[in-house]
Image 1 (cartoon, rainbow, N blue to C red):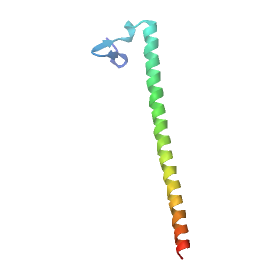
Image 2 (cartoon, helix red, strand yellow):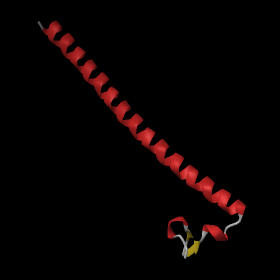
Image 3 (cartoon, rainbow, N blue to C red):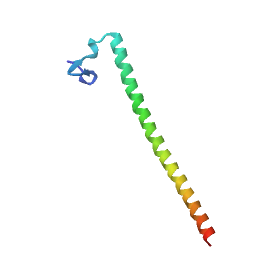
Length: 76
């Protein structure tokens, strides 16, 4: 009986890990590791993007408030 959770699929073909050479297993492990790293990096990028947008918004808001104060003090 084949363990379906570890079966590799490329196109319409499936490969059992038991049928792979050591080099092919190494390549498969590298791919899996790189996919996980990419997922983690995308997660970090999403956090950085949200933080950048927040702080940019805060700066713009602060500058607008400062401009409004200057406009109201020079009008009076």
